[in-house]
Image (cartoon, rainbow, N blue to C red; front, side, top):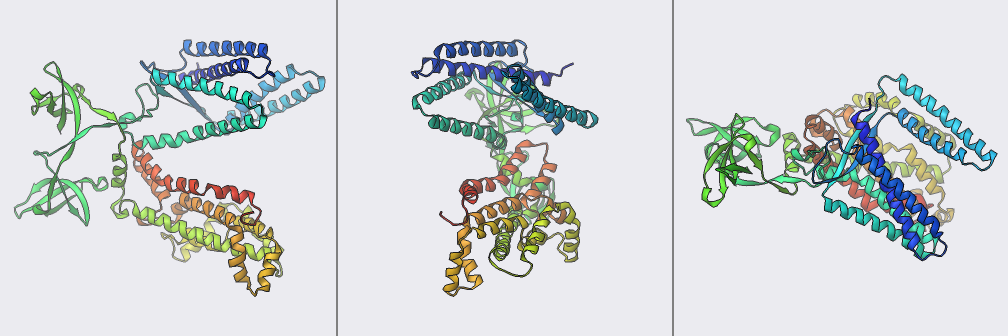
Length: 582
């Protein structure tokens, strides 16, 4: 029996195919009504009717078969989304099925016997591929296929607006392509459109992570199973709790919030820490004069009382689940305190961002990390020293291999390149034994010191750049009396700045995201970088997506900013041949 998730995937595919044919019909109609004399109008009109018919039937089947939504949501439009999570062998089988179908149609429509024979030979090749992939898939007992289902929910007005914009955009691009009368301009418009679509598709995961970092727990999944793109926050008011006051004070040099458990005869009090959350539940004694009473954040709720809607804030959460509410509206009942059952109250929530997730993320970090600044400091140490060490060591060695002559240069260069074929796992244990012998375990030295010994790939890359610099520059520097070091520093390095920038960016990203190194060599929290801390935070708070996404966004933001400000160096490093500015 076909699972509901698979039926949902089929319905999603049919729906998007239907919308594709519908937009294709719009494009054909735009070409029909356009002014380009080269257009075969009867053919475009027939094609528009065929595309509209196929799209209408496909959308009708997907909707009538009730395949698009496992649970119907009222008052919203739902654009379904799905994805298959399966091993490589299953993906290979799926691709093979598609290619076999395409080659079968092509062979059936072939004009000449030679063309038909060529298509059938390709078809046979894909049959062999699907047979091999199928054998590997079905012999692997751990192989399975999971279907992720979801959707984007919008109001009918928003959905209609999006559809109108899509139709207008397709019609406008089609008419623009006819008006330009130039393939180059039309191709440019198409390329820009595809870039925009690609940016949108690949930007969705980051937008989802960013939005999730501002969500409350109840917004992680909508009631209909879709994704909540617009978060809402619980409204609160400050409340001075007289029954269980909340105090602020200092504990081991840090500001904390807590409640008083006991008042001792000597004037001291026992405080139960409420925040930071990492030491919540810890108790300590302090002088009562050092306490400062502060308000709590009381959630605002609505409820039915005496046959009318009332608004108030929760003053006490009782052990049996009931909630004590002080009414604020209407004015006639203001100040009245009433106890409600959990099902009788509704939280007052408004569209907004829950910045509290970021504050709670810092609050959950161990106290010795100083709100995560220790993680950031360690990461910056690794990044700075790794970038400096990689650039300087690789550039010096590459310069020697490209511009200097010494016995065994070619043999040494080949030996250097051969180290690139060594898997990292082969050198992992010897490196660990060396660093353990040096006493560097649980320090940052094993993570940045190797950068000062060069990198085979970076040396090879810079050597090629150095070799493309005209010898006349170096000869001129020798005539002026420059030494090798002076020539290297003042003449050669400025010529390869784009390549150095690319290597610096690669090294920065590698050091920032390095997880395996800290996992092997670091034990104590005060020496952990952000990548390792993120993994530990995920293990501890995996059940709280809002906090996890907040930590992830803060971790990835510097890398994103670096890419946006330095992306031109990626292009220059590929296009330039060695002379800066040429």
